[in-house]
Image (tube, rainbow, N blue to C red; front, side, top):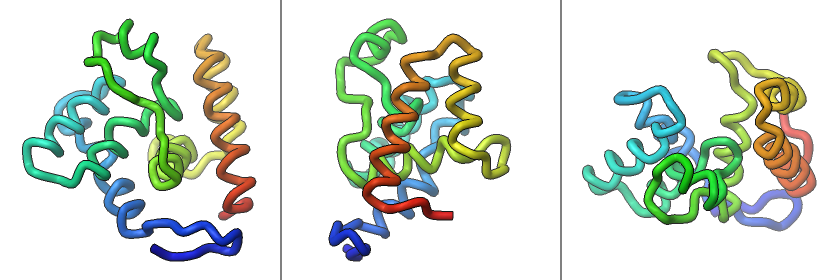
Amino acid sequence: MEPIQSGLKIDTQLVEAGALLHDLGRSKNHTVDHAIIGAQIAFSIGLPETVIRIIKRHVGAGITAEEAQWLGWPKDVYAPQTLEEKIVAYADKLIARSKRIPIQTEIERLKKENKKEAAERVRKLHEEITSLLGNLP
C-alpha cells in the first residue's frame, strides 16, 4: 500500500493488476458482457478475488442491480466499491480507441447514446476520484 498526499492508502499493485486484466473478457466478447466473462476466466485460472472484483465492476463506472438483471447477469454487485476498483473504472473511461480523452468527452458520448444514468455515474466517479486524488495527468 502506498500513501498519497491525501493520506489515503492505495494498493498500487492491485490497481496495476486490475488495469492490466480488466478487459480480459474481451478475448471472448466485445459487449458489456466482457466484464462477466472476464471475471469467469479470472476465477477459472485462480486469480485473487480482489482482481476478479475489479474485472467484474469496471464497466460503465458501475452497473446497477436493475441493469444487471436486464442484462441477464447473475445477482451480484457490479459497481466499484473500493478505491482500487474505482481507480480502474475511472481510468477505463479516460481511454477511447487507445487514446486519452477528457472525461467530459466520455460523459457527452454516453448522453448522446441516451445513457444518461451511466453518464451521471461517470460524472460522480470523476468528482469522487479528483476530490480524493486531484487532477492527475
